[in-house]
Every structure is written in structure tokens, then in C-alpha cells.
Length: 403
Image (cartoon, rainbow, N blue to C red; front, side, top):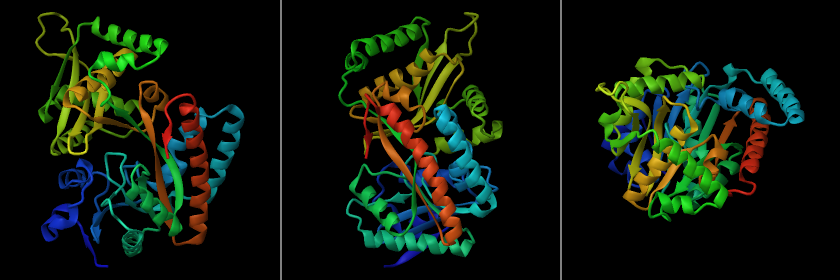
């Protein structure tokens, strides 16, 4: 089977127009991948083989962008946060296990070629519905060759899902090739198709939960906010300051220039919408709106998905957050019709309590060096155990995790 590697997505589609013919959503479009070039890594590679396109990013251990860094995933802040949420006896044993892994796994050993789709929780491979394992083996082999040529000891396939038949084939292929599977979270998905309006959504919950949601709605509406949905020009300077504050509150390295860069990249992808809420101007004579918060998202009408992308909230009350990110966005989705909102990972309980289902996300890691691979496997077992516990605790008595 013939494989080809390009450095830019523009080069790929120019020399092989069919490289994206089976794109399974906006997130795998030329516009999306091109907008992301240079953000995650200065070096990206697109490998095409038998109708499958992989987007690969060289992630050295010194990379500023840490989302797809192997050491960060297996030994960094995400697992520290999981340990903090674990029961006290388990917290002590997990901390000891993490210390053991860190003693054996240096960040310098984990330079990675990551196969991902930046900016969303979907895998870094464009999969045709009828993909076969031989084609996937060929592609994975070429990714591994590319990693060796770059001197990168770890290969990562991030955010593999099993909610499609093609995704399940990818799981089996990577397992067969000796990759270590690591649960890294779940995508929270709210299917808005059953609801004719927001009242119908509220009515779908049991009495106590319904009262809680309606109370949140009243608290928001009683402040008489203005809400509107804009296009890409809605990513204005006042929202950039909100976004920067949110990044910093959650420990992300960012500055004003980085946020404006994120906004500019997001605006280059078709389908961007910006839902914002503004408080009543104080004093009443003021002309500039006072943003309560916003959420930016993409409408992918071909796949009936809404992909949330950016968002921040100046008023940190729960009512403001849930009304902008859920109730107002749901109202918009209902008007569009038949949309599934993808909220991504984290804060599972808040999402499942508002009707989201969880689709498990698995990242796969492989190293040619047996010693390094064994340590990656040990670290992966710890992260998986903690993530699965969080998912089980969230979904007991609530929404199931798709598997």
C-alpha cells in the first residue's frame, strides 16, 4: 500500500485532492487542520495511506503546549488532580505509585510524535467507514517510521473513540501492534434532538433535578441579561481578556498575544459562532456592554455536531455558567435542529446531571525501547485506574459511559 508524507495540509490536498475525501467532520477538514498548524508544534506531518489521513505533531518534552505531551499525560498535572480527588487511603498509595513512576521516567525520555486532532477530543486519523485493519497497520507502521526518523522515542495516538465501527477497528489495530491503552477521560455529549424547546428539556428530568435547573434559569433571567449569537467577528477584545483570565485561573501559560492568536485561528474555520451574554449596563448611560461570559462553538451541520471550542465567564456564579454554556446553547441547538453538543472532557458530574452522556477517550502509547515502554505501561495503568474510578463514580445512577 502506498503512503505519502507532507509537511502542511495545503500541500497534502494540493498534491492529492482525495486526501480528505472521507473527512468525518469539520474537525478533520482542511480549514481546521490548517488553522491549527504551528500552535501545538512547529513541526507537523500529514501521512496518507489508502484513504486514511493521519495528522502528526512532534511534541518534544520542552514544548510549551502540554496537552499532548506524553510525560504530562502520564505523570503531570492531570494525574495529580485525579489523585487529589481520590479517597484518602487510595490517595496515599496512588501518590506513592506516581513517585515511583517519576523516578523511572524522565521527561527527557518522552519526546513524542502525537497523532491527534488539535483543539478537540477526536482522534488524529480520518477514518472511512469501511476501513480495514491492514490499511491501519500500514499507516501506523509509517507513523512509527516517521517517529524514528525524527528521533522521537514515543508514538502516541490520542483520543481514540469506540463509538463507531471504524474507531473499534483502530482500537484493535493499535492493541495488536503492542500499544499501551490509557483512559484519558470522556467526551460529554448532549443530544438535543429529543427537545422541541428549553421547557421540554427541563421537563425530561425528575422533579428535584428539574427544580434545580429551573432555579438556575430564573436566577439568570432575573438579572435581565442580553444574549446574542454572533459569527467569527463576535470574538472581540473584551472576550479575550475573559479568556486570558480563565487560562490563568486554571494554571495555563498564556498571554494576551496567545489568546488573540487562538481567536484568529478559530475565526478561520467555517461555522464558528459566538454566544455571549451581557449584563445590564452600569451606569445605564454606558454604551459598552459588560460581558457576563461567552462560549464559542462550531456548527457542523453535515454531522449534526456542535463542537465547543472557547469560553470564559466574568461572572463566576454557577447560574451564569450553566445558562450560557448549557441552556442558551441548547436553545440555539434546538433551533438549528437535531444537533449533538460535544462539551469535551472534565467536570463530568455537572455535565451528566444536565443530560450529557459520556464517550470514553483512550490514548495509546508505544516505545521501541522495552524499558521505556514498560514504564509507560506502568504509568498508563495508574492513570487508567484513576480515570475509570472517576467515570464510575459519575455514572452510577446516571448516564452510561459508551463502551
